[in-house]
Image (cartoon, rainbow, N blue to C red; front, top):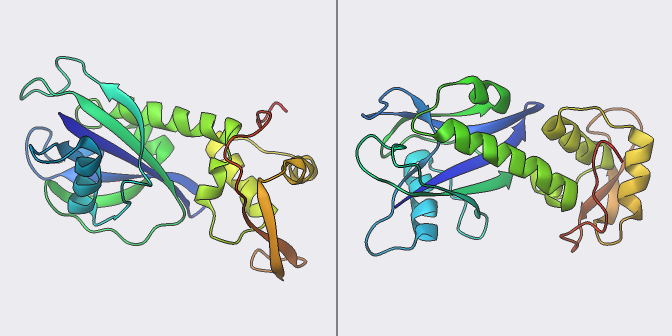
Length: 219
């Protein structure tokens, strides 16, 4: 059994995924998701966190990683039959990573470019599923705040939706919608001008996890 991990972030105004360059065969030199085999004395959750740290230096921790799929095609690994449990995490702009283990290099690659790359194993399929899963989560949950710093403006939150959904949202409508949802956002003292213009109010994520109604580009 194996674990594969899809870490998604927004940095430089782009939706990006953490990929490694495989340092050995099979698929040596090919881009891939971080991941690897489960050891005899660990759970698959433990393996996901360990492999992510070993190959990228990114310490997500088990609590941040969410299982979203199982991949069991008989020929997905040319070495032998391997079933993989796939995990994902949504993170704010992350620190630098470093390659280790089976990884020769690491990189935060724009998602749209990564989806066009012939990734190792069946990682293109896993990445596509993870991106679709993330887009659905933004529609039905408050997960968009995971991409934001601890304190953020409504304009910054709206930009998360626009980048992940690849669409423009009406600023006024979005502002009214999110403020009407009890428990989504909590105001904090102070304002910011970090995005230019007039001072903007700051918020932090509230306790709500599931939205009472879907929040989508069509609404």
